[in-house]
Structure formats: structure tokens, C-alpha cells
Image (cartoon, rainbow, N blue to C red; front, side):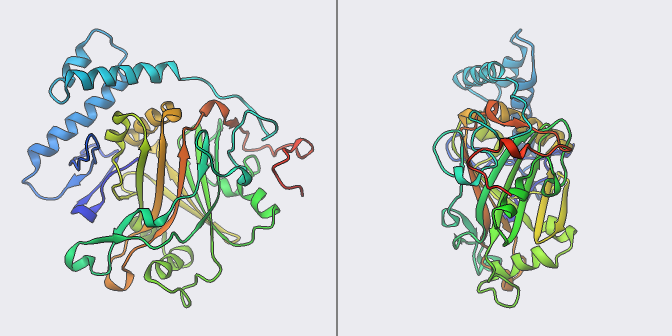
Length: 363
């Protein structure tokens, strides 16, 4: 949902009114960020206009052709036709998801059930850390990226649901039970929870951390930095260090253009992040709804869900030689999600245990 971090001499402030932009192109892929220095002002304004015009075009209900004409400064007629077709596809797919306070029965997809990991459609899966480039050991001197070591955390489950109430601390939510199911199944390791709050949609990912990764026993800088992040780091420092790298494996080029491709971003620049720590669980709660620009992009991605196959990884930014090379903390893949299969939950109601699906553990 964000863009380049200062790995490229850049930083980002998604949702800020003074949003600037730069471009890193791979075919039609575009990466948005704030540029330091004054030599790029013309390019910043051009790309900012391009990005905002795409968003305005997606939001515009005017079929008079005015919105199309505004785009002719930035895109070819063929690209504008593609945007127009994509917009109408999103409008046709804007359906309501069914309500349910339980995971019972078929039709609710794999969300929240750890045994249903994997698949090519309406599915979630883990990712390989080795597929991503991170700051190398000598990055501060030569700015070179290297292949990441294997990811630190094991992805246990991805949950996706809608709720009439924004759930800031999902790990404690009796209605979602995302963490409670794992603990009931005997999972005792430390857990990292990523809670993307899109309102009403919430996307939850949970990683388990190996017990041998501690500050005094970790074998590499990325593991030592992660241990500090989990146990000792202030929330302010956590937010300054936490990065994401999005990678769209398959999807419409307008979405690639809005999201950026395989480009690191400081997640908390312009988007509020809250942290909840209890019972060996650290929850990273990201209020996407609090950023107007991020929310606009998120809504487009939600409506295009079944057309998207994407990966997202988390990592911590290394600031000095002792913290390099960086390493992937954890990642997830969501392939062609069907939002009509996600459940509705009431945060104040627990699921009905006498109607539990066979794939979930009993008390």
C-alpha cells in the first residue's frame, strides 16, 4: 500500500497533503515516494499528478469524458481504455460479503484456518525470504542490496473478515478468535500479528518465532534486531524501522502502478501504527482507514481482489553496521481472494463451539 523507502534515497508519507512522488519503472510498474532535493521538482509534480488522476478517475462517477481527457497528458489511449475497463470491472464486482459469527460450513474460504494453507485461488500461503533483496552488510558504504536469508517467522495463518466495528487489538478479540484457535491447538511459540484495519475489512497474518531467536543467542544481525523489536524497542523506534515490500505477482497494471512493485517502504510514514504486547504476542495494528490516500488505494485493491496475486513481506531497517545485513522477518501471499467468501463477525460474540468446522481444534 506504500512505496519506496530511503533505501533509494527516498522516503514516503502516504496520505500526507504534500505527497511527492518519484518513479521506478519496470515495464508499467511505478513506485511512489517523496524525493529529497530540489532537482526533481518537475518530475515529482508530474508523477504526483499522474497518480492522483488515476485515483480521481477511479472515484469519478462522471461518464462525460472529462476525466478521460485529463488522463491524456499521462497515458496512451489504449492505457486509458484499460483503466476504463478496469473501473467498470470493479463496479460490477462490488458485492456484499455474507454475515456469519462462525467459520462453519463451506463457502467461507480458507481464512483463519491454519490447515488450509496453500493453493492457487482464494488462498493464502507463506513466502521465501530468499526471493527478496535487502540492505547488505556494506550498504552504508556502497548502497548494495543482497539476497535475504530465509525468513525468520513461520506463517501460521492468514485471517480475513469483515466487522461492523474496527478491531484495533485483534489478538484479544473473542469474536475473531484468530489467536485463541492457535493457542487452543497447542501453539506456544512467540507470535507476531499483523493487523491491517481497512474498515470494515480486516486482514490478519500471524507468524511464529523460533524459540532459539533471542538477543543473546541470535546468530545474525537481523535476528538480534528482531529480538530487540519484539521485547525491548519503543513503539516510536518500531515504527521508524518497520518496512514492507509489496510484490504483485499477477494483477491489473493500474493496481501495480498505484501500489509500487518490489520496493521497500517504511510502513508507519503517514499511517498510524499501534502495538499491543501480551502473553508472548506482539500485535502490529495498522490503521489504514486513518490515511485517506492509503484507504483509497486499499479500496481499489479490495474490489480487484479476485484478480490479484500478491506477496507482502516485513523487515526491519538496519541503521548501522552491526544491524546489517537486513533479513525478512516474515511474509505472506494472498492469491485471488474472493471477498464474497469472507465472514462477518461481531467483535463481542464468540463463535458457537457446537458448530465448529472439522478443520479447527476442539477445546
